[in-house]
Image (spheres, rainbow, N blue to C red):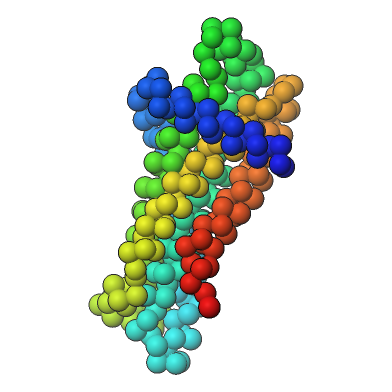
Length: 247
């Protein structure tokens, strides 16, 4: 794990240097961003919609019993923007688009396409990693924003259907309790999660050796490692921005 983490950091640094060299094709970045967004948007929004609906369903009656139904929107929105939307959206992107990146990279490796790049004196790390990392970081932010909007609307619908909470009361508590810091941290999480997904999945694919069987094994491995690193990063970011205020 430590060796692999070092490889991920090394590959990320190489990719960033390649970005600043000005040799990254903008059309390639757009193509990768479209692929990642198209592959992951529907499943990400569906997961966040269901998660928000379930939470709203669980808390609506409880808040109504205590007379705090006016705070349902604010409570749900804070949980959604701080954790649910960035975390669930990133996990969905990693499971869908991340594994696709691994499979593509692993196939390039086992079919000697990467060796051909080395023969042509082209840095395969920069050429393959940089567009995917840049596209993933940008796309993940937009997916997170859309997921947050969908989640907030889903909570309003469920709260109205379950306890008849008027949307005005719901959204008033959203504006009352929501902090701009939560939005900034959420966007930062989206960008960092996007970088982690592309870097980890590309590194797993780049390390693949063997044949078609090894490509499948690398795809499974990337899904597991991506999930672990995303959760660890979520914990670190949460501690840095919110842990210091505890106590």
